[in-house]
Image (cartoon, rainbow, N blue to C red; front, side, top):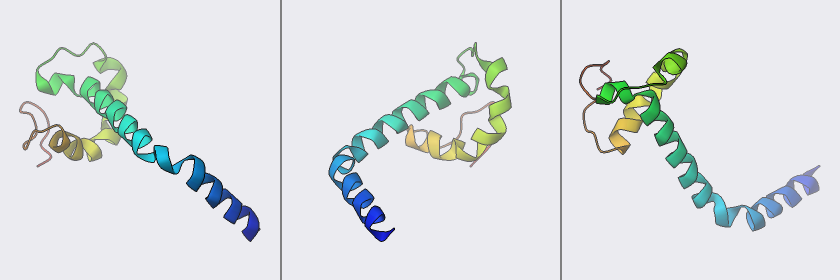
Length: 84
């Protein structure tokens, strides 16, 4: 069992380690786009997907502060909920 774990660690180190930063960057880019689409109405942009993303707000609200600070907004946009 330990040999199998050691083999898996070597395999991940050789094949996935060089691409971890690229994969993480792409994940963050797609996640930021999803947040932008989901919270577009807070930024004053009409949101055609508001009806479909309404059920996701309780899950996304916890991560909203991290997102808006990473996007360069020190305070949460006006007109919505307050996270800061």
